[in-house]
Image (cartoon, rainbow, N blue to C red; front, side):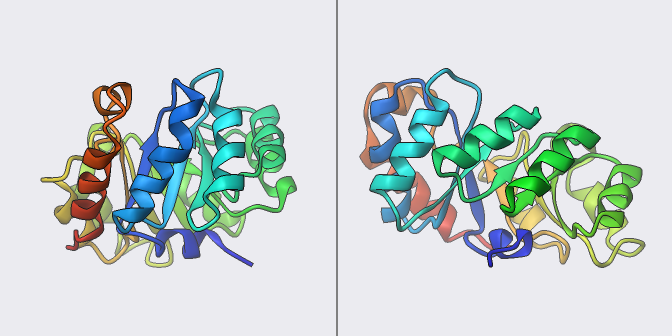
Length: 208
């Protein structure tokens, strides 16, 4: 079974994608995969998000599709029903955490403090999302907690760019990073999926 730690190893960058037009979902996923990206996080921020997850799960089976911005127990259940292979939360309440466990899917729960990370570790979770990364101390914060929390590994997301990515990926407790720069709204609006593939290829080649 795929675990949260497995998710961190799929690609150096996990694209964080907002889909406004459901017809963009499949070509976006195909462009990312063609560029060498093995995973896609479709955020539950738009009315078509669940339909987008369903389409990608059905039509682009070679990419691992997950649901991001899971902020309620209902989100967890709906995303699972739509075909999501993993869940990502920006933070964690007890209700959201219990619902995520109940789906049986791997998930990356959000944490931005040492106490939140320790609390999630107490529940047996060792692969976490660090969000919002840049606003919460960035790579320097993650470097500082690698010593006291050596078992935890992170996917930092929030404000990271292609230029700042290597400083995160160089850290021993970072498995991958989440990035929205691979699918900027202007490219999706223009249906410029070739440009998305180019950005994906650049991201797939990143390392610390």
